[in-house]
Image (cartoon, rainbow, N blue to C red; front, side, top):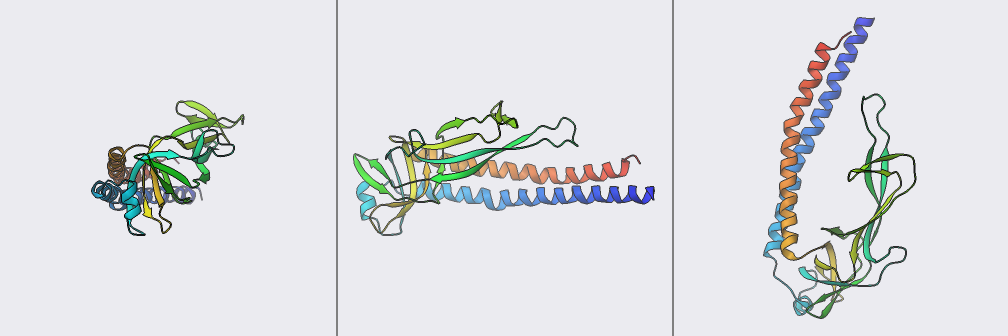
Length: 241
């Protein structure tokens, strides 16, 4: 019976590492074949879009893709300090795996609120209306505000231990320079798809960097997959009874 139990354990170990290797391989292929080309295509499209001012936005056909850079205008939102648009995240701590030596708790940010109201964009002293868009993405080097909790469970964040339930605001203040990618609305304003904290050049560079990161990450995951599988097989073969 002990021999059969040992064989089952070894088989389960190989199956488990095999599944992990397949997941790594799949994620790597998605990064290389989907995510990296998507970011590269977005950078290519943004680079070739015309520089638009308020007049160009006004004259653009309804539904046309637009790219415009200017200074945000709006009022601070309730209970959000100086933020006029923000994403609110909560720090969720996963306890350390007690079966793994030297394991440490892990933390991840989970989005709990995404608030982007109607805003204005000042372009050459002329305002452009930016319509509220719940699905618009906020990106780039934005302002951050961290509110730490007092929970006993904590995980490392930026070199320090941060308690479970801590909150992080990320977003924009009035007067921030932003580049907005979106579509011309029927009302004359813009329906934003993405707000980037910076100018057009920085926006394009961020897309190129994201494409490069996805490509390198995908290659690393594909290279790691056979090593994980090999490690599982060797562990099963040489595992002590």
